[in-house]
Image 1 (tube, rainbow, N blue to C red):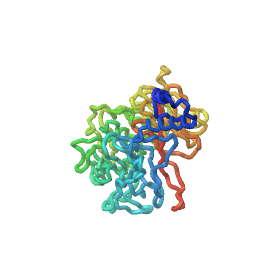
Image 2 (image 1 turned 120 degrees about the vertical axis):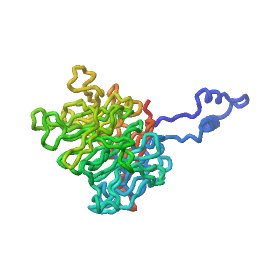
Image 3 (image 1 turned 90 degrees about the vertical axis):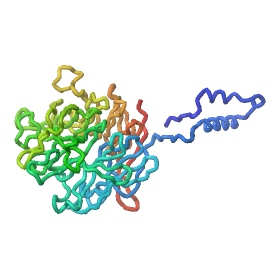
Image 4 (image 1 turned 30 degrees about the horizontal axis):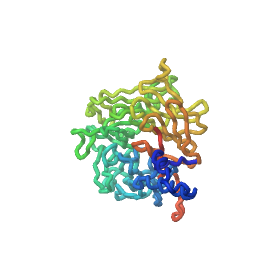
Length: 463
C-alpha cells in the first residue's frame, strides 16, 4: 500500500477538530467533511506531487536512447538522448538527431539534426550525448559532415570526433577534438581516429572518452581525455591526449594492457579515470579483464602528449600514472566512481558466473593484506547486473537486474527492488539531486506498428 502524506500538520489537525460551542452534536459525516476540507486547504496546490509509480514521458514514434551517459540536465528538468535505431538500422551512422525532453511536460526539442545520408554507408552519425555538469550544453560523437565525406569517408568508429552544442535548441556548435590524417607527423593536440562516449568531469574541466585509431588498426580500443588549451589545433577548443597506450594486439607480455574500455571519472576534479583493461595473464597465453585507475594530476601538461605519425601510435601526456586494482578474469561494464571520489563500483562474476556489483577503494587492491582495501561483493543476484549508478549521497548504488531497478545499501549490502515486473529496463541514470531516476523501456507504438525505446522516470526517496 502506498504511504499517504497528510498535508496538514498534526497540531493544526487536532486544534481544528475542537468544534465550536453549540456544534458538539455535529453528525459523524459532517465531521469527516470538515476534516477533508481542513486537509485540502492546508495543502500548497502549487507544489507538484511526485508519484511513486514510474511514468512514461516520451511517446513519439522514435527511439529515445539514454545510452548510460550523463543524460540529466544540471537542474534535473530535462533529459537528453539520441535517436539511434529509428531509421534503417541500429548503427550509430544512421542516428539522425540529438534531442531533449522536458520531464514535467513531455515536450521534445531537437538540439542537433544535421543533413545526413542513410544506408550501409551513412553520415554524419550523431549519438552518445551527455550534459555538461553546470552549463546548458551537451557533448556527443559526430561523424563526418556531408561536405567532408568525399575526402575522409563515411561514419565509422575510427572516423568520428566530439562536438559541443548549446542545449537551448539554437544549434550553436563547437568542435572539440581535431581528427588529422593529412599530416605526418599528426598535428599536435589532434588524433587520427575516433573518439566516443564523451563524459565531462564533474567540475567540467576535462572530457574523457574511448578512442579507436585509424592509421594503426593493429591496436585495440583505448581511452583518453581532452581539455581546453590555448595550443589546441586551430578551430578546435580542446587538446587531445591518450591515457593508455595499448600494446599491439596479440603481442603483449604478462600484465601489459592490450585494450582499455568502459571508462568513467572517479573523482569530481577529473584527476582519476577508472577503466577495464584487457591484459596478458602471467602464463603468457590467456587474458585477464581487470580494473585499473589512470591518475591525471592537475599539474599534468597535456601538451606533452605525443600525437604520433603514420608508423607510431600516439602517447599519453607525461605524468599520468596507471594503477592496477584487480587481477580478475572477468571485470566488466562501465565502471563508476563515488561522488566523494573514494570508491569505485564495477561488475565482476561470482563463482556461478553471474555478473555482480563489486566495490573497491581507489587505493585498494585484490592483493592487499588489508581486508578493507580488497574488493567487496555487494550483490548475489540470480541474473546479471547492469547499469550501475551511484546515488549522490554515496550511501547507495542503483543497478538493473532481470529488468528491475534495485537499490543497494553500500554499508549494509541490503538490496531493495524498487520495480518488480521484469520490464527489460536499460540505460539507468540518476538525477543530480538524487530524487529521480530515468531509464529506457521498449514500448509498442500502435500507429507505427513497431516498438520504440521510450524514456520512463520514477521518483525515489533515499536519505
